[in-house]
Length: 280
Image 1 (cartoon, rainbow, N blue to C red):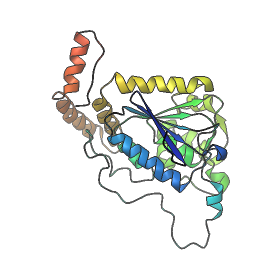
Image 2 (image 1 turned 90 degrees about the horizontal axis):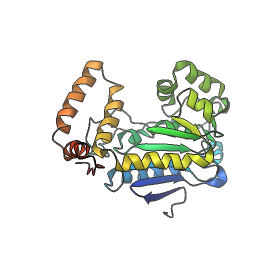
Image 3 (image 1 turned 60 degrees about the horizontal axis):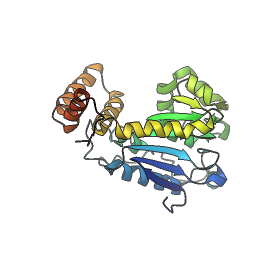
Image 4 (image 1 turned 90 degrees about the vertical axis):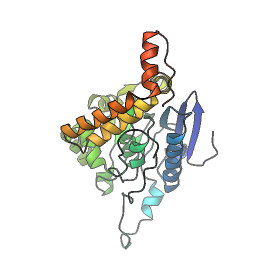
């Protein structure tokens, strides 16, 4: 484990587990946590030893939203406008294969969509506000059955922040998204699974073992290059016509034929053995 105050990391068999680490505050969000999480994801995305990233929370919660101490310090007379976006910067993963998406997602968590490694959220407990938004930037989400979800914003006199107005309807549909945003009602893991917010809801004692099994499979049994390209294809397709998506697929397919991972994928199938992918 690192000695970071708000985020901890642990690497095991090619899987990096990133843990939000303020259990006494249900991992309430701070700017320190923001910076440390971004650093952890950026480093993991560039590390060839890491095949998959798990994001979870310490203690009994995932993330209860923004730290209230910080919210209370916001002055209504402040002159500086709030910015959830940041200037578009150079691709943080310039060596990653696949179409570039860094210019498409400039928000607080846009780097997670650019990251070539798959990111899985293991939602172990209460998740609200910016914590819920954070989970939407992961590629897969699994939740404990008793984990409580809420958007929270409308009950704080706030609005649909950090890109959730764009992300949530694409996952659960407009009717469900508006229900959750307008009412800020609390709901549990099984409903989150039913509406498509999470891939699966499981008993708490089964959550991390299941997520770790999925993560190890992706870290060892599939081509990391294929995942990186497909992840960027899907995110780029949000802004493409069908014809443009087909053109991107053709370009990426032709490029994949020239890779070692393609040769290994075919050879391992023919030879009936586990693949040994290198990402090249």
